[in-house]
Length: 182
Picture 1: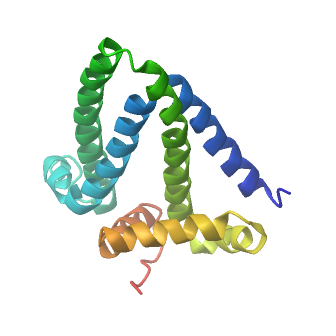
Picture 2: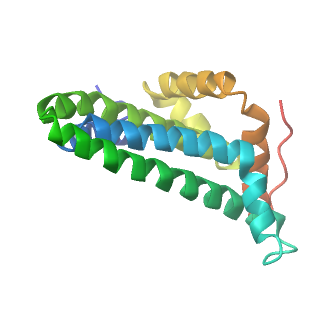
């Protein structure tokens, strides 16, 4: 039984992306998932490269610099993966393996939904004043599972400090007190 709106929305997003994965196929979905993952992790690690590109345009707005720097790195990496995926998808069609591509795309689409919901959980945690995180944790069946996945991925890629820095930069845009790293 669905206990709250968060679980309902989570299931809708994961289900929709799984069906879309089936329609688009493994290659396209896998490349997009890998692109989403690598773009996110590399943007967290190297957002400072993007910051160096925009700091002259927003000299006094450090929070805006960080967010724009992150987005620039993310978009460049994502587009590079997208181009690679287009080439590989063409090869799969030439080899007549479309049925296998579509069947395996179902699982990858669902996995992409899980990644997106983990990012949503992280973003919610950036604003503890809203008490949304606590409300979801108390009622949700899926929140603990997604939060565990988020925590494990953060540890595997060693990005806890970088996520804290990005979260604090987002908070500074709204003139909120910086959270202390735990």
